[in-house]
Image (cartoon, rainbow, N blue to C red; front, side, top):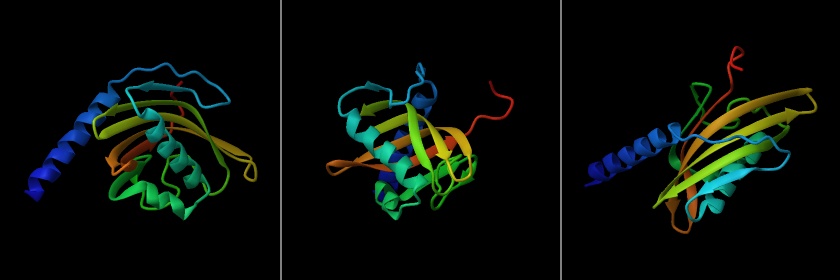
Length: 156
């Protein structure tokens, strides 16, 4: 029974990731968050993702509460077990979300997010993009998978 539930969960996550990879969206640069949402209840899941990025940049341990105990987090092709979890984010600095697109389907949601990390002390800025898959747990959302990367130097 437990194995069947795990198989269904993995299948659902793979389906969500496949759909997210095929989603097209328009990225509108802005100094504020620009969100395109699909379905009901997307605001709550987007807020979880925004908070996870901001806490990650601050190396705040409260970020751990946003993830399931078995969450898989990959940044720039490396498994991440602690902050910084997201590609391009270093210790300190601040994160600005430049675009977000959330889709909710039943108890699963996926959020595509573009972000920028800025460190005034290091005089450095990095950009990144992440796909975050969340699962409804009780009345809230928990991150079960996050994959982030930075553009390659030769990408436009």
